[in-house]
Amino acid sequence: MKRAAAAIVLSLAACAGTPKVKVERLPDGPIAARVAAVHPYAFRWDEPAIRSYQKSMDIVLALTAKKRLLVFGPGEFEVLRPGDPDPSVATDLVKVLALNGLDTRGFLVFRGWAERRIARGMNVVEGKGRVQAASSEEVTYVAHLDVWDAATRRVLLEVSGAVPATPPEERPEYDPTPELTALNRRLVEEAWALLEPRLTAPELKDAPLTLRWLPAAALDYGPRGQPSLRERMLSMDRLQADLERLSVYRYFDPEAPPRRLHQDLGLPPGLAIARVGGELDQYLREGDVITFANGRVVLGPQVLQRALNLSDARVLQLSVYRGAARLDLSITLP
Image 1 (cartoon, rainbow, N blue to C red):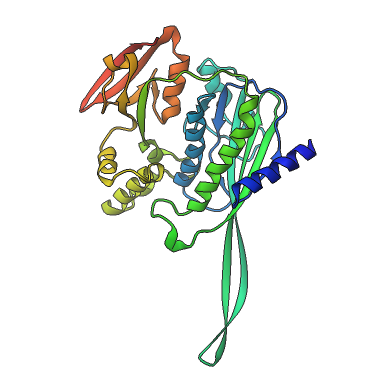
Image 2 (tube, rainbow, N blue to C red; image 1 turned 180 degrees about the vertical axis):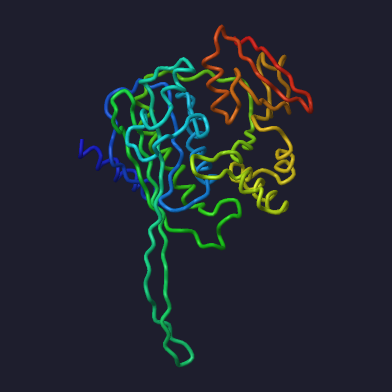
């Protein structure tokens, strides 16, 4: 096992360049889990709640796109003891799974966190006949991701990586740590490449829809002891508050045209339909916004995906905004 782990570390480093990814632990044997829960992303320094939400949702969106696991993300379960190594007793996740009719023992938990390492030094600078001492500071972000298995009650996989901080002038306004964002997303892909071959659950059913997520739910996210962005916006002037809202949308869709982004800010939170195909075109239209699925608030695409795969009697109940009108639809699935 040690030789296999070393081989994977070397192969990942060789093919990926920088930053290097380190695999601490490897899964072995089949994995029967059908559910994945993503813990709030943890920083080992002070960051507002919105940053934790963004990094957590990066993991949620990546896993949802794989269409193999039913995903629960931030705001869908409560973390009671963030430092507890056993996620099954540190959260109310077991209760949430039971309410959804899901196995309370066969699930995976994805936990990401980051630390910031600062190296300080002194440099001697010569100029105009004088010698001066100047301090220097190098910042490195180290990101971690582990996957915990409820069936075996142990950590299946651990991956980590390090990346130097981006110069301030190169950071986009909507993300103060773009290098950490990229590293976090890469760790998810590396972890998935090792987990997917061992999953035994079949691929999830999907709907013939092209969707765009409207992440207004991010504004209301605030774990215990931390104010939400919406609460912080109350003390801002209107222009600053609008810029904060815009930056949340821009983070998740950096290539979006400015005009469309501003239009999205005026829509209800949920999933905007960009294209409808198959038999669903008799129920839904381009431009509709799905806000509820089987009675659940659509906090992200993972909620609709779960509804499609857990609907009783193959009937999907949706609440949709079509312009200013709200429609309640009952859709018979094929």
